[in-house]
Image (cartoon, rainbow, N blue to C red; front, side):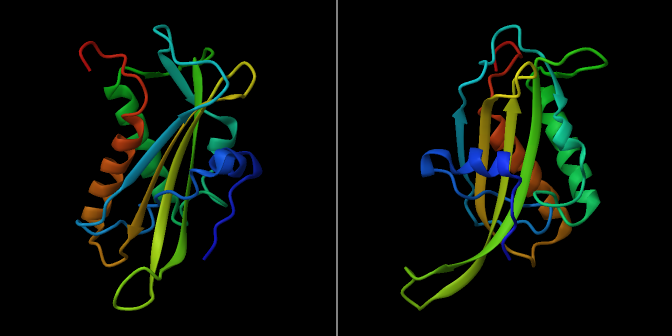
Amino acid sequence: MNVRMPERSRNVLTAGGSIAGLLLLAFAATGCGEPMEVASRWGPGLRFSENTRTYAWAQGALRTTGAGRPVNPKGDELIRQLTEKHLALKGYEKAGGGTADFLIDYWAGKEVRGDSARTDGYTQFTEGTLAFFAYNPANSKEIWRGVLRTAMDSATPPERQVERLDQAIKMILDQVPSRQPGK
């Protein structure tokens, strides 16, 4: 199953040809032994600085269904909660009513792929994707993107799926500078 990303996000992921897919743990997480590959890239927009402290969800991030969102709306809610938790642990605050220092959005998807490099023959597997995008609120230019890709196993128990999603979001957001002293 191919999931189409919004044009803006699709261009961000394919720029430079180095980042093609990510993780979608909200649908079905990987088993314990599957590695998660993380990549991040800084965009041409404003950089995070010492004064970058507040964030808000980007306007497009307010949608909870459709392309780039989990089929189950509870998955969207979980991704947002875990994202906000990890941003808070890094010292960022959700902007109350004022202007945020950066806007954040995410894209999640999955795709069936094949592995012809295996010695026991051609094997199909599902590759999940999760990407986060940070934008400059003044001009909507990308500041940063973080991408995680992994194989998925639909047989993973739900509680393990949540653990893996939490781990994945942490791994992606670890690429963003911390605002906490000593971290």
